Amino acid sequence: MNSKITRRCLLLAGAAAVVASKAMSAITAAKPNIVVVYADDLGYGDLSCYGSTTIHTPNIDRLAAQGTRFVNAHSPSATCTPSRYALMTGDYPWRASGTQILPGDAPALIRPGRYTLPAMLKQAGYNTGFVGKWHLGLGDGKVDWNGEIGPGPLDIGFDHGFFMPATLDRVPTVLIDGRRVANLDQNDPIAVSYGAKMGDEPTGAKHPEMLRYGADPEHSNTIVNGISRIGYMTGGKAARWNDENLSDLLLEKAVDFISAKRAAPFFLYYAVNEPHVPRAPNPRFVGKSGMGPRGDAILQLDWTVGEVMRALDRLGIAKDTMVVFSSDNGPILFDGYEDRAVELAGAHRPAGPFSSGKYSILEGGTRVPMITAWPGHVRPGHVSSALVDHVDMIASLAALVGQQLPHASAVDSFDMLAPLLGQTDRGREYVVEDTKLMVTTGATVSSSGSRILAIRAGDWKLIRRSVKPQQFHGNPIGTRPEDQLYNLADDPGETRNLAASQPRRAAQLAAWLDRIERGGRSRP
Image 1 (cartoon, rainbow, N blue to C red):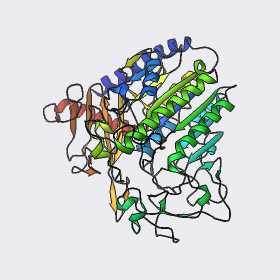
Image 2: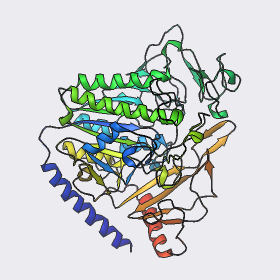
Image 3: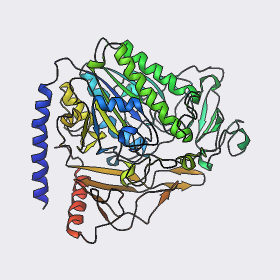
Image 4: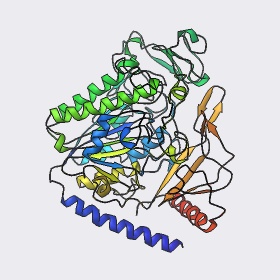
């Protein structure tokens, strides 16, 4: 059985390479601009082009109509840092230590000199820019927020960066322009702690009356803009972002980069925040969704995507630009803040037909919306069933721009350019999905528990046995003390475990997963 599976993988890989080479012949000699818009905690069912009838996203729907919409696309993990790591490196995150949800003061996870997506495109002659959420660590273990900050994005291939260090709900709530905190007053230096409280800044735990909405113990530390965050911070008052205006500011920086670099090929990684917590959309979106701050944040996201597309049109470069839109993991309603996302969701199903969402090894954790568009090159109005994964972005874009991947780098990234162009629905033979058990220590919650892996092959999915069932923020993580086998064609909600009735298939998939894990790489 092992040799048969191996031969099948090689045949499929060869067939995909032939299709990809034909796809390349249809591409003009000039390299396209590339914009990757990466949403945060957006679910498969959160967009009207994916079937939602409870929220309308006309701009993203328009992008889908112009290009190819994927119904079997996956984030590499059910949480943010691991997915972003895989997107940047082309390696499954579970192959490396430390690829878990990072605190705001974590050291740089991707070290200088590492072969990355932006480094590859830079070698191909691209101007490379990054705007938005980083959350891949900075520095070497102790960041001086008042001086030059590094290593970071500018040390792994990005020419320009304007970004948040971690997440909306973590301190420091400041933006970094290149290597320094933007708008910092040196007379009001920043200090950050993820251990003991410092300074006299009010916290959500002690001053709930100061909050616009309540929070769980983990999110009840330093208050910024009426919202308590994870971690403690003092100083940097002039540099702190305003939540309601943050998306507008990041959009401005993204459009500025596009405008400044439009004369030569550019790559923009635009990591937007919506609809991650804390949700505090601009007042012009408040109340418009009927589903509270989370729904309003999705409307803000849709508007943002529309503004990017309008900027490309206005600058006359839409026809020269490939846009990729997706999300880092599945959705979640309650994630630490009492913003009534659960109560106001009504009939809305953020994960669509799938179970659970963020943090979970169930399909809702990694099955995400994904759209590609490029006028004249990506098949318009196409709905693709190709199995694709964000870990493939580096190999696919390398094929697009004529770069050869080093054998020792991007070890899990496959060339999926043909399906990304909508020229074939033949994608990957399998994907490996990943999450971690959540561990609570006092008021601190982390994803530093045991790894949970699953393999998707065709309609079948096997979840490796782990521990007793766990829930986090009301979401089932999908763990059990025995292997689980599901036929997603018949059971997309993963409600009927077929491992006992199909022991041979379960054993084959388990053995396949073991070989991928032990092999150290999956790309030939």
